[in-house]
Length: 295
Ligand code: CP
Ligand code: NVA
Image (tube, rainbow, N blue to C red; front, side, top):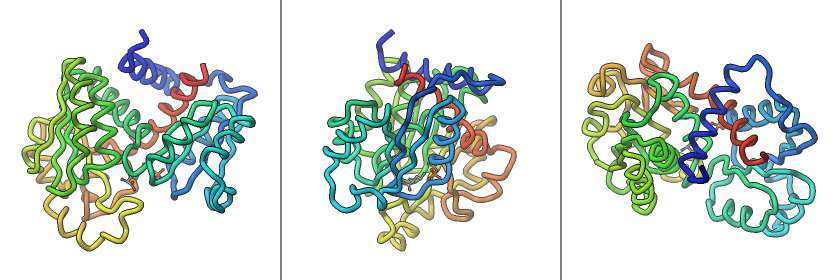
């Protein structure tokens, strides 16, 4: 039971149990978790902070700019020092290499709370939401439409672990990282699924159980805004695109959403939307993840 796909499944099982439980166990009693935010956040920050407190632990929220890290202290030294104080470190930053370096030098578990390349906590919440609506995700199809970056990558990896077929529909120049696609496809195939990339949004959503999109201008991409709004215009998730998906298809979005850009309000506030459950599920999957890594 040490296979990574088993671990993903166990975390999702535990998240479902926590969501149904009237009271949570004091699994983090006496434990502290540092939450470092170098980028803005609403959902991630609140769900981690509330989840840690509800498990009896102590969240230590740190804005990157208020830390010596923001004045040039190295990641290595920060990792070594924080490891003497806290039991786990959660970090949101643009540069994925920074998280990797923190994890290399820390003596405690490090959780990625979003980089430009990956958003694994979101991917877990996405899979939990799909599972809530349809049961075991194995064999189901998820379509991602838009920018092939962090949320796309994490949906691919999480979906692959659960044996899903994940199809990304992204414009040329904004395709997901081929290395991530190949790795996710390998994981998916071992679990009976597949991961592939197309450039037509209609092809991507055909037969999909879940249609997922994300912002066109991610944190760190602000200078490219004008060009991105032009390139992504044909990739909007509106009711017409939802109609091309499977008959029971749900709409997913990590939020914050931009009405009329990557998604229309009619979709994400409409009957096919699962975005509010998806946001809530961040609380449950992250609490489950902390229980999993802190044993
Ligand atoms: N989806 C998500 O990560 O939201 P926040 O940026 O508000 O944390
Ligand atoms: N792709 C978005 C996700 C926000 C939750 C970003 O990186 O800004």
